[in-house]
Image (tube, rainbow, N blue to C red; front, side):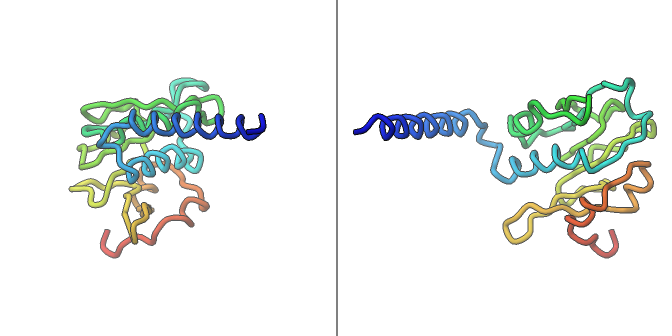
Length: 175
């Protein structure tokens, strides 16, 4: 075998081993659906504007909070690793209840009321039992999609880019 073919074969073998190691390291509960949702959560951030009062300092981190049950495993940490919004690194925090230090709040089920002092983008799975989430995930035709509630967004003081609004499914009547 020529040297370049051997290098290519070795590179492909190393890539396959690395992929297998990542797959084995991922927890059984972190399905492909939640890996996609984790990436959505991180990618929503640049398309939302928070009021300046939402951050304690100009370089304070942007905090994604997972409230209650964590269906993501390491997928959310992997999606956020090394990412920043301007000078703000994105950090992930898991918490048992809603607190004012969160900028994006994900709850699989209703996590209770968000404090009035919090400027948090609220995201949940569909259905959100009793919660008025700003963004709800929906699985349609085997694909993860999302619905944005413009009334909830407007009431929060946040602004969502028309680009993100254009990617969302239309709001369901009566919600």
